[in-house]
Length: 408
Image 1 (cartoon, rainbow, N blue to C red):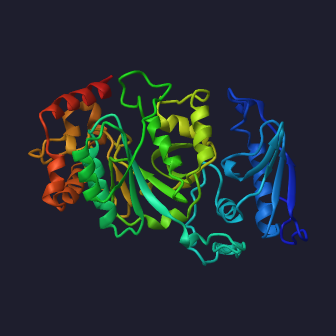
Image 2 (cartoon, rainbow, N blue to C red):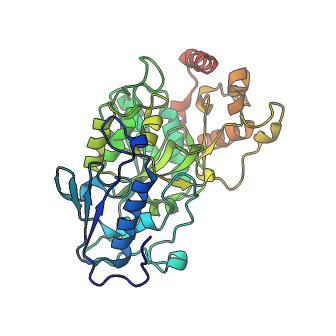
């Protein structure tokens, strides 16, 4: 990193030649994995944030790779021709990124709230750019998506109630396709969701009839440009503590799933029309390791900000001995519980235990204490909402299907 203690006077433009590493080149010719490329982008970002004139700064990138979109937003391009890009970055957004580790190995530190100092860097989060939107005035929301069937309607209802119970001050937005009936939509609205209708998106690398065939519908969240930031939450979550404080983090922030990969079940994104268009274009060029949205997004956002696992506690105890019942206990300090395997509402209510116990392949996901936590939120809901969580005969077939998928 250049010496930034004594900034250059009146710095208003930074020009950088961007290297491209052969090892990381994808089908579209861009490099996602070149560490040198990351370093160059971070040098440019730090120079602009720490030394740039606050009223108008530019970043010029040369080279066929262009800048990294994880750091410089495509919305900020003011000119592009050939191998040259000119950006006018939003310094407040850029400041949030350089204050955090960029990469998948370091845990993101607690972020200061608007107006507070950022640790030893003596950097204010509140905007100092004339005319800029102060962060605490930003519009933010939690969002989830329902598509292809009504299997997760009950989960979305309970999720909304758990967020409201946590005393959140944010909007709740649900994206629904044509498979969600008007009756279910009315219940979802009563639970707290604002409904927006979408057309689902097929996953190009998923097999027909599989659970992740239409999971790319999740990409629609980037179209919610009425909001500055969104925390996406899958409908098989339960929010246990208020998570509003995590909106201060930048895109893309998430908890780890396995080593350097993030779990896309709960993540912070910044809506953007051009980001959505890029994702839609790249979905045919960039493969997904699991055929679904998580594999694709991990390829598209190679450099992400790591949240602690307690923000997305995966109900998966495969690393424990089979006869170790310590996983009956869910840690007290977690923010959100992610119900992997068969969902609580897919178990018969007469069963006072997690029905994941019933199949050897699903025992890794079983926890009676987690099961009871979900039902406590359910039981506290109004009767008319609970009516959408009644176990139906057709659920038996779905349980068998889930067991069959787990076994195979």
